[in-house]
Length: 415
Image 1 (tube, one colour):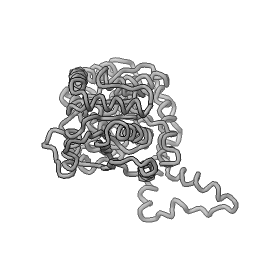
Image 2 (tube, helix red, strand yellow; image 1 turned 120 degrees about the horizontal axis):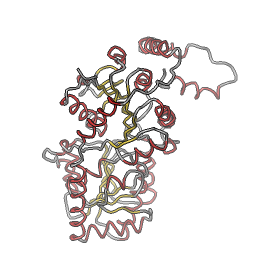
Image 3 (tube, helix red, strand yellow; image 1 turned 90 degrees about the vertical axis):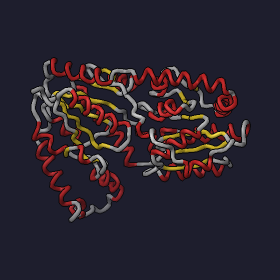
Image 4 (cartoon, one colour; image 1 turned 60 degrees about the horizontal axis):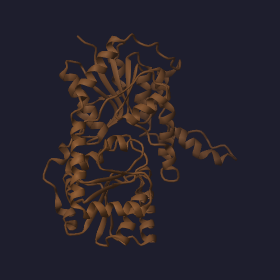
């Protein structure tokens, strides 16, 4: 029997880019005859039956096995994978720089900082670092991973294959120009810059236009409130915060869009760009991070965030049908190149390389690591019944200023 090739990650989400890749990897590995399970801390309820608890990983561990470790934030699952004897390849989905979340989401500042710090430790643990884009591969190389490669993202558009649901989106089906952005409402996406560019377009080029912002803002209500205050302060008309939508509603918004506008400053890949390619929406995107690589010469990239110049580009796309058609043709060609990449062949080649290479010397692990694992599990069992167990020590007088640090420590992903 060949060695098992398992995957480990913090959480398996439904319908997101990482979740789709994890399931795709498992299909390829099982099709090639490998035993392959997905070990997680948490999973969407619709996917739980496809996963195993990460705490069961030591029970199937063997030095001949291979772990494919999906790293996006540090986690208990990550640290357990680090301590086990398997050969390991790290698949990096990128971590947003924490400074984007300062004064917006303190907990995420902490998680992103710790995740980026923890990532560097895996350079000595892994035989191979895989980026799901060239941008991510270069980051691993800069961190000192001895060997790096790209495991290409092969987009899955099945979630957009059904009939579009125009029950809500139908209100925007008219002669107006619809400028669309799809993605989480988070600071690194620079929704504020999208709004500024749309404001210039609506004011100076076409008052019969609207901005459709589609994406979840869960956990970022404060940021969305700031954006709404900005809209009111500038007097920007026709800006619609549409929140999280179903897949069939998302398909409808893509169908109604005249231009997809992206101002994001940090992306590891940016799936909505290729979703726009798939539907045939001309894309206008800021040339930052992984975006130029994802665009692959298609769409229109802009390099300066001058709202008036970006507005002029929106107007050019919206009014010149021949230009829009040429842009869409170029996007079709880029999408065809992406879909022709040999995802299965690349993955199996990586596994063959890991099997053939001699194992690296395992870096040291804290002498009491497994004791910490046991104690953390015991505390987790107590938490629902005795929450005071995590605040059992009396507060010292005169050190009230330390309280935030104590809470952060209690919330950390120990062990």
